[in-house]
Length: 460
Image (tube, rainbow, N blue to C red; front, side, top):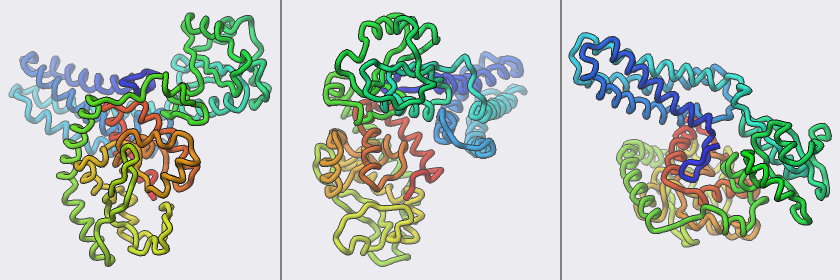
């Protein structure tokens, strides 16, 4: 994993992004040098337009989920997404290269090169989405521990990364119980470093249920780290592998003395400018859709077009969130707050459509302009539920140290939740965002939000 602006990316993902961009630029450059008269005059604008085309394709591929390590798509589904991506990016590429200041007979070939480059990238994306993992890029991991924590680490690794290979479990002498298969348990081959070298281990994850009483061989772990073997504690493992802070494995000291959770006037100012600019652009682009939605709501049922509700925002302060009304006006006629659920019978016909496509969230852009919300952040929750969840879930109030968002890391990583257990799982992602939020992570969330909207993933 590589950490970029506090956010973890898999090396393979970064390599594929660079490879895709380079493939387009290289293809265009090759055509310019071999097919165009006076190529050095055409080269600068051709390469610049190629970079713009590569960036556009990166956005579309990110939204299509082609850079995610784990997926459950079939080969035909990947082909369908590739075709859709090409239908979006090919007209853009043709337009970009139609304005090149080149009048030579070979100039038309530059357009062809751009189209070929896009086709090569998409063919490579489909192939790599289903290609078996090469042994050279696999990562062998030794788990130090054999209890429930070690089992959870292994399960998360195998589910999150197809390029991971578990070398085995090395039990600590003080662990009270074993929760993994006996066949996976390892016997030490000398020191911990000698064992790691014998197993050709790249990484060690310390996953002990009990750390007291000398359970961790600190000196041996340090020797492994000095020898080039990566060593992580269980909390950092979940952070870098799943983009979560698992509240079962973190403590206040880890959060206080560790990296992250930084706030500041400069960071807040940059985020505020980004929010306002993006909100204005999105409002301008979505205005026709919002007008059609408002008309449909008005024609279908009596009642207000917009729905206002009290939510908890930054530092626990309340504010009114604004959304398109998607439920009947008597949805909570008994006065008892309820979470929305899948196939909720309180939802109107128009409401089901706008919820599925997330159109009901668009009026929240006004809340962003007012400063009550950010474009990206934890989902704002109702005071009734916040009071309950704060009592039941440790560190729940930490999510209120940043502004709530129209979209967020938890929203794009976890399906819509309507239980305390779901809220705890989403809090794991919210804490990761609060700890590591930067403009870069906001852009990552926005790209993944596009994929969520296009696939209606997690709608309710």
